[in-house]
Length: 360
Image 1 (cartoon, rainbow, N blue to C red):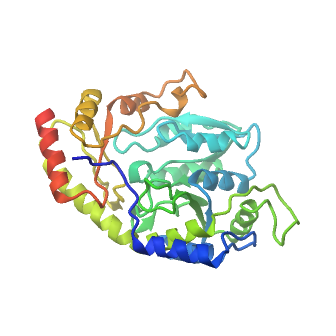
Image 2 (image 1 turned 30 degrees about the vertical axis):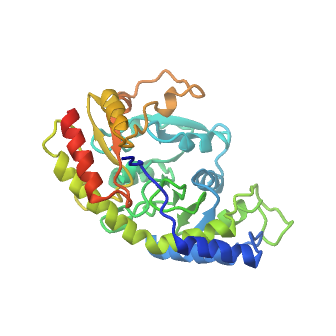
């Protein structure tokens, strides 16, 4: 038995639309509004997350870069982010010339700690980029207070949280901009891809230029931009996947509920939802002192458990910062994610539960 942590769910419909795009021969568009499939995807994503505007780009990292460009982030600016995240969050900031300032996380759901965040705000602070990690939503009330108090815009890194909601509002739509990834391991995929959401028309217009070399009508570059366009093939796949997303999320919740029931009597920290929160169950993350040994033995049994993230960004060789983030360090040494994606069967969830009991 081999149970992967996450797999793309692709079938005949996705294959059919890819073939259709290839036969049509229009693989991309340098037009301001993008190709027909890009526009169709943007409309479907906008409807799903209830945002006025969605701008498709070619990766989640590109989404973060474009959002930072849209805020005119520059060299010398400080952007506050958690260190307990995928490195793309920090790399996107460094690529603009700005400096990531690493903030600790909350033990309850692995998202940015508002108290530590506020302590680290200086005159150089330009924006905050909280991460809705594992599908868990940050403390948006406190972040909103801090944002208003210090006049700092917020870009939500929602790469892992598509479908997560708090008080009925989607992650990524609480502040100025939200950024998502459509990497193959995410809750839905376009192969490679990402998108940005905003309710601000001026930001939308700026983002459309940024993803297309700063152009509006071709060869009329007005601001700094790059080729961040989403190809038509990827957009076509994403449009199909968006239609299936509610089914994917329902399946993930079903598996998560069953696994919670099976693991509830073990001496481990199991994930939970806060009041008014509905997570997308992108990753089912537990915490245990026996993480490393458990991870090894689960993998030996064919269970694709993974630790996200054993090395916080600030400790990677490129950043290598000697700073104190105690909860981040605790999480890096204790967390473990278990497979619950839609292709995991009830029998496999029961096998995971049984194996966990045997090992612990």
